[in-house]
Image (tube, rainbow, N blue to C red):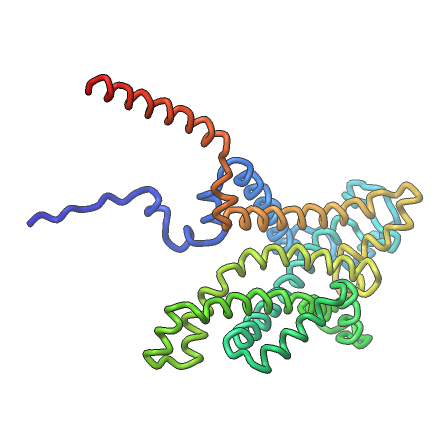
Length: 342
């Protein structure tokens, strides 16, 4: 008996762990405009992350440095060889603070989004599967939090958590917790809805019949299926977290300049400079916010389109429309020839 060996296709060779990563897998199935959006978003997001990682090596000065061996830095100095992007009204180097601000943004995103995912997923699983009074209480609390504007809620939480202290992780931890409270209801509602749907599926009923415990069903069967959309929500919430952090800093409830560099705070201090023709103190932090949010948004929206079969099926309408008449013509020719032979 001979054994037939199936040749390994290119798609299988490109599989493995890297092929299953969200960005890599979406790049492989994307085409046209969606692929371009995803590539641009990935590049911008990658530059943002790399800037945050290598900020201590690339930045010529620290974020709170206002002097060196030659003396104090000039205030509101135009871009020059010594200060590539000029200086602020406080004497801070704009180039250095912009680079260090990327590190602050990454720290806040990681802490805020991961904490909100952890809390929201646990509460959503318990609420959706157990139900009863626990479900009603958690849903009411989540709806009450949603009733508040996100930025206003973040401001209130920042005031409560910081308690007038700016040395708590340099204010980064307080800002991250403030944003966490805003995002928890989003993850809670998504996971709860998926849990309620999955609880009625046949594979869950089968697990109950064979005597599986509640924790085993929730942890092994429901959790894996209910959390498939988390990478997409994580990407979209990351851009929202940057905007919320910038809003806190712009309104004066964010991180102090001596504790960490923050783009929103720098924009707030650049308001008075704009009327005096000093453009460099606000352009570069503002551009950093715009490009970072744009990159994360493009990645999130592209992943959302590729995860939706209806949108993914319409990604190449021109080719489908041009191929349909040709196929119909070929089919009619074949039918005519068969009829003539008959």
